Image 1 (cartoon, helix red, strand yellow):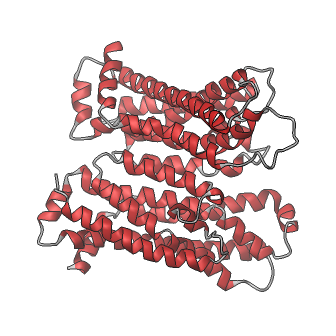
Image 2: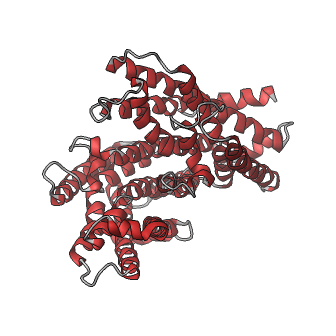
Image 3: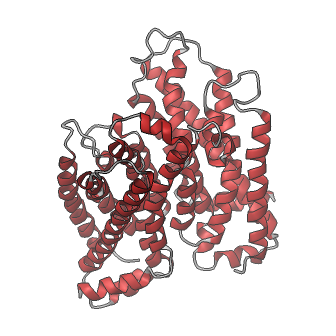
Length: 245
Length: 236
């Protein structure tokens, strides 16, 4: 298993993954520095860090995070789709299940790395704007890890789609079709909590119940994120078992 | 020569789902408003005296996002049709110039884009009539909100086609497309010169026609730059 992870890592390193992972903090910096909520929020007693986090998390979690996770899954299947790579990989003494799990684990690590870089960009925005309030470590931590947990089902579905389709565009189209409606879904109290693609936003949103581990209630986390993860992961896992290569 | 190349390109996209995506884009944009108006029609009708105008604005809030992402998907699709089977080499080996090959791809994409705009107009009108928003249908505004974003998005089409056709790794054009949609989503904070702001039809003079003219002008310019660069590169 370790060897398989290493092999996947070598392939991924050569797939121009670094510029794509840096896209996360770049988007964070762009939104954070271009938004000017400060003027609207003058006189409201609030930790300064939240002001830029509001606008940064909105665009980052709503659109960027779900979309870019699909790019990672396509990248990790790129070498296999080119000139019979699946055959070469599966001719090795590995099981298909292990290949699927190894690819999944590696993508989740990449997303985690990007979340941490995004945290860095949150910090950088605060430095540039000269915030003097204390850094709300606990809450930022919650939204960074929470956003990561919320991508678990999304990455599983995207990995399934990326294994199924040869081109980058097809799995990305599936991703877009599910991600764009979340802009509307997060505005609705009825649909929002049940829509898996809206979960990164709900999890990263600052200002839920701060006593819980994350910003969304446990029931929602377990049913929507957990349930979605099980459905998509098993779907992809069994699809890959039966796929003819 | 151009006609035959275009026919060949239309044959290549058969049964690949590109026409389906061209249908899903505008249908999705209107379907989101079906959900929106389905859930809270009374509230939305109270928001404005001009129900048709407000409905068009609501539809238009998603049009730029769908156009930017749709362009990224379609251009990458077209490029990967050639990439997957190393067909660039065979295509260029035919007695056609590289410039015409590129022009044919661009024309194909532009036709798909304007087909999507026509569908958008049709779907918007149909659902608007279904909602019974008033007797006077603003046909001019309807056409404007359907076709202007497509014209204003021509530079994005030219840029994405350029990147997609010269990258071997299609992750790059897709990532550029994601940046594009983030820019389009936050277009109200962007300066006027950013091409991703133009499909939103916003500018400091409040005159959508400027975006259309800029779109066509800069679109042609970016198209020429992309075409020349494509022609100069070696086909691997």
